[in-house]
Picture 1 (cartoon, each protein chain N blue to C red):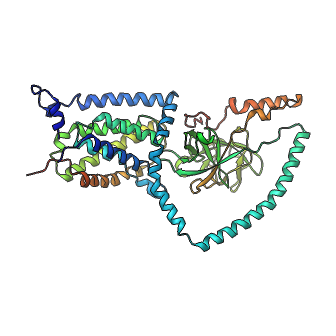
Picture 2 (picture 1 turned 45 degrees about the vertical axis):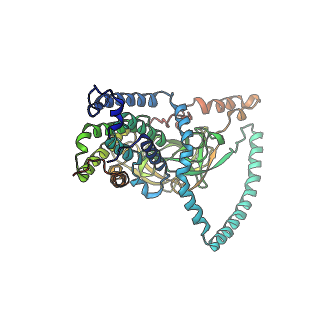
Picture 3 (picture 1 turned 90 degrees about the vertical axis):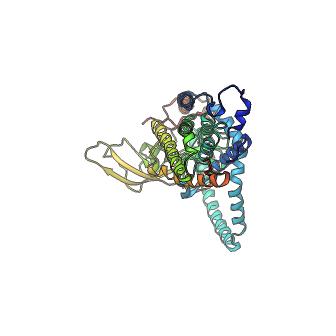
Amino acid sequence: MLKGVHQKLEPQESPAFFVRGPSPFSRMMFFCALSIVLMAVDSRLNYLAQFRQTFIAALHPLELIAQAPSDWGMNIRHYFTAHGRLLDENQALKQEAVQHKVLLQRLQTIELENAHLRTLLQGNVPIIPKAILGEILHMGRDPFSNVIVVNRGTHHDVKAGQAVVDAEGVIGQVTRAFPFSAEVTLITDDNLAIPIQVERNQLRAIAFGEGKSNTIDLPFLPTSVDIKVGDRLVTSGIDGVYPAGLAVATVTEVRQSPDSPFAKIVSTPIAGVNNHLQLLILSLPEPQQSAMPTEATQVTAETAKVAPTTSPSPTAKPSIENKPNASR
Amino acid sequence: MRPVNLTTVLLTLIVALTFQLYPWSGQGVILRPDFLLVVTLYWVIRAPHLINVGIAWFAGLIVDLSTGSLLGQHALAFGFAAFLALLYQRRLVLFNRWQLTVYVFALLISERAIVLMLKLFADNENPGLSYFWPVITTLILWQLMVLMFGAPTRPRH
């Protein structure tokens, strides 16, 4: 076993069995110190973002190799899917599309009317954000955090801070963007907060994820608050990240404990946070578009311009490296 | 026990990394073994002149990068597990197969415990005792390594 080392040594020196360089203990102490320094630098300073991005990009081919078997398996399964089932599905989808088209026609006229009314009142016309279709690669390799990894990255114009939705509602927010993939923190993660509004009475609040239990919490609301079981929570749109009106969660439990001034309100996310493959990554609204030259709207335009950057936004900071730092 | 060369070691480490990157989904994710850890520990015990604390630490750093966790968490745990393996390495090669398995079990538990501790310090949520389940699958993987590359213990005559 130690033959190779033995040959390199001078014959006079001590036998290879005893020559092993620095002792394991000193090596261990050195590398412990190194990793503690790294942890401190990584958590407090932002120097390592570029390093991480480069490394993840370098790892991409290896990742593709690792995914190949499951992709093949999926392809084979798709190949053998019953023809009849596909036909049925196709039929159902077509029907759904027609129904949606009818609804959309109405929506378009209403939207035009709404925009017209808003220009009459010199308000801001709501912008419909552009979206990128992404697919979930995997559920994250770290059992400590609620993240998913999607197959769109900075090469496809995905930036950290963008909102991610599926057909039913909000899924989460991009927290790290790598060249070919991006990390999406789910709304159930306890580091992510999202400004919401109760659909029934327009009451505004901030929702926090609860981590493992897959629920969302509305803390710091008084016991007398007008929220009932079954209320739908939608995004309020005041943060400049999530467009207004996207479904977030339904309230499942409202509890009042006598020793707390706050009600305990538990809700479950509407979007299929854990069971969809496709999702949409919405682009961040551009603040310049809302700035209007007219004098009357100067004030509102300016607040709109400032809002996404300087307001104490409760959602995750759209920096590339930071995990969402919401302070409770 | 045949002597090993660095190429074999590095190749197995790269293969282990590829397995580490395999996208797991569903309930099985709770049992995902630490491919890179078990291969690293195997070579640390078998060939300490090639793989030492430094390379184990570096392997941990790669795990940190691929999981997106704080840099240095897994690195510290890998380095410490390699240190524990090296500490009694000369005695370990005299153990029989099952004694060695028990020791490896302790090493794997220590690695998980350190990562858990560091994660909790860094304000992550506690995943509960199920976090230690992968140790069992990793131990099965260890037996596979022994089958493929031979026991790192000295043959008895």
